[in-house]
Image 1 (tube, helix red, strand yellow):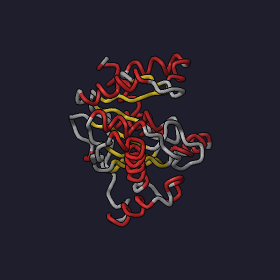
Image 2: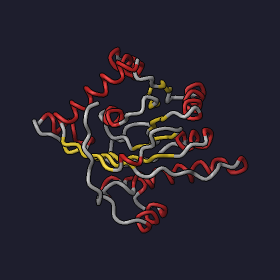
Image 3: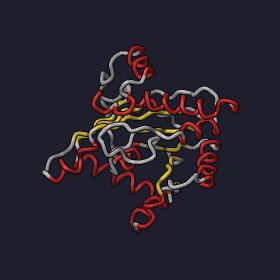
Image 4: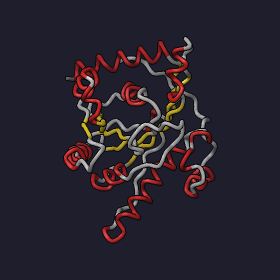
Length: 236
């Protein structure tokens, strides 16, 4: 499994370097060990392999919609890297239990809080699953913001190398979810995750969260994003 995983990662890094102009910021914020929930926006099928190519941790996995099991190649690919199949049509308790155990065991789990690809080129309203897992597993959240993948396929069809950027923010802990105010607390924590992602995105990507008070607060707390220099991504 580890050999297949390493070979896939090398292949993906090479493909991204060959076919795109990719920049990575904040990779130093990714902890080398310990349970952590990596939450990112999701606009293209390119997003998951892009993140996977950047992760050196062998314990990294992700929740993947089980509709992709109908594609033999995707089924093999996800199984090869230890992905966790998720039925998005219902509350998939078994998948959430496996994901929580992985996090509590010190693993890294990737998730798109929006629950599906955005078809509008900007953030859509997120579901509360990411906040639920972070609370139940007691792990910090690492926000990641991806730009450029929404137009990548069109650019490639025009024989142009799309410019793609991914930015990792600093890990943070969410406040606890209280039983008496569970729904409100989960929504508050979900908004916190999404606003931290939005704060690393250009304004045109803010979408549903454009007018959120917490986003305005975050933007006021920090220097404007996009200041750091990108780091090179090399095959391993």
